[in-house]
Amino acid sequence: MGIFQYEFMRNAVIAAVLVNIACGIVGTYVVIKKIVFVSGGISHAAFGGIGLGYLLGINPIVAAIPFSLLSAITIGLISKRSKLSEDAAIGIIWAVGMASGIIFINLTPGYAPDLFSYLFGNILTIPVSDLYIMLVMDFIIILIVVLFFKEFYATSFDEEFSTVIGIPNRILYLVLLCMVALSVVVLIRIVGIILVIALLTIPSSICRQFTYNMKKLIISSIVTGIILTITGLWISYLLDLASGATIILLLALVFLLSFFIKKAVMAVRRLKT
Amino acid sequence: MKPDRGTVKVFGKNPEEGRKLAGYLPQNTYFDLNFPINVFDIVIMGRYRGLVRKYSEKDRKSALDALETVGMLEYRNRHISMLSAGQLQRVLIARAIAREPELLLLDEPMASVDPGTQKSIYELFLELNKKMAIVFVTHDIGAISIYIDSVLCLNRKLFYHGSKEGSLGKLEEAYRCPVEILAHGIPHRVLGRHKK
Image (cartoon, rainbow over all chains, first blue to last red):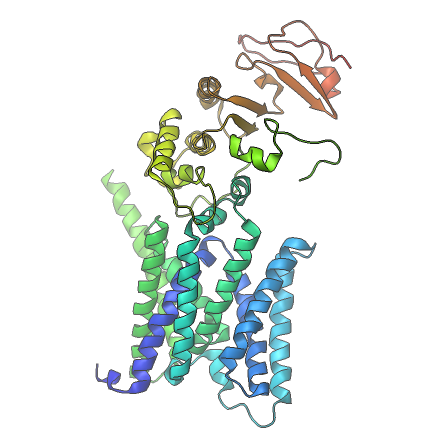
């Protein structure tokens, strides 16, 4: 594995680890609470922040943070407080975010050189400064989930009962959407806006077939994500393919395999009994 | 939800404080049966007392006691997808009583339970009733059976049929439609006329 002698490869591996810590945790909640498309909306809205970053001449990732937090809170508030249904809210925020991103880039003088890397991701071009941003995001996400594990668990399982026992469901939902927004921001660098959903949902979807324990599910999702991201990276290097797309196709392939493995395990168990 | 008029008191306290004294079994449970959670983890949720507070040894013990009361102790590590509807209902009852409430609110508790299981669950309620007050909300008039002490009929107005009432009367007045009571050789009770 001579490829790790390059600094960009070391950075890519560190990024793979950091990003999958956020995704394993948040992605597990996204999958069990079935808010995959809420996350899709937030990630596309983040494009507005990227465009704003170009216009203002600051790091687009930094500009995407407040932008996606704002869109997360907007989706959460619109769907709970108004007559507009949640999926309509998602659709509007999704489109408005993308459109404003394009307008911001139009207004930016000159050509946006690595814009393509925000849409489809490029784990190989990650600057060290972005690694620090990812580290901070991971820290915030871990802190929130460790502190409020019980509450998130209860509200994800049964909202009605959670209300009865005095859990602040609405606030927790907004916090969860904000965590989705933070992990979307760290993900944009790796797989790009369009493919964010894959890293948030596929590792947890693979692992939930094999465990019913929430903590094991989160940890195994993180480990699965790290292994598959690095393997995908390696394959993309060997075959000279785009890294983000290779990682995602590998994730999908493993998901398909895990599905059949699960079926086979169930069939064997049935034969034994 | 706030009442349009009047006030609601639970043991003389407002409902937010009264929540601590009441256990609740919802009518419909919409949760995902593939959710990663086992029986014990559901029941201990009933012991939740506030943000950041961890579940104590006492909370664990109360959860186990509640499971024992409903006869589900041996299933405590089982995943919810491996339970029958009646077993799941028992687990949810355990979750409600794990709070050690003084009042147990049951909203249509028999809705998803087959008749054979219903009998055993009624008997469970009878047992629980020794320790706590139980309010049993139902649309199934047949359920007003030997297990119940006093009946309140609600149809725009609330009619109270005191305890141990057994004389002939009309349910029609409460329900505004002819009422037929089907009782297959089971002791049943017909209630007195609604007095305004």
